[in-house]
Length: 253
Image (cartoon, rainbow, N blue to C red):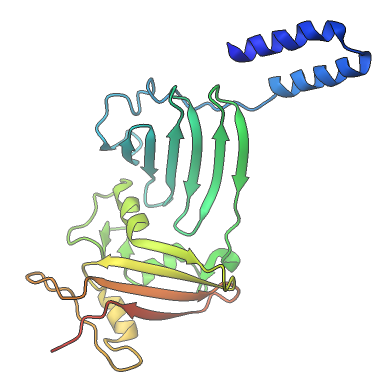
């Protein structure tokens, strides 16, 4: 309604403008009318979210987490996207962001009437989106941290439910890409919350660091002093080559 009143005001004011000013005013009105509008339903009226619990599996099998006017959705394992939505107080969409494990892919912001204000698209910084010759999802899967075919991850004892976004939510929670502004040629990928060290990882890297210190798998009966194992991959953006180090090492007696 405010938008309509504003346009009517502009039209009435055009009676006192010069021809040049009228052309500029008409262009302004045309630009307003041609602005892109979101097709996202109002949060309070959207049956996808209305009267739903704070955490649930949606009809399309996305895992959804909600708090007030904030919504996080995690897609199926074959896509591995995190979609974050924030709504205005009136329930219209304010901001929608889409993340891969590596970066924020895109972000759109809208005014309270649903008209697009800004759209941002980001390109992956990792050359060819690859680590050691593989796309980064396949690389970390081959390292043993998760298995999309079984739902098993290193971050819980039991497999995630197959064909739901709950698996994707696990990966976003425990696998984090970090870009170092001081050294733009490198990125770090931190894997934390490890409850089960993959045998594939142990076979590939052994049980000792370069200085000879040992790390141990978390005991099921006793929490080891020093916290949980954290693995860090240091990756060269241009070449996709990497090295591995461990933090919060558990030492043998």
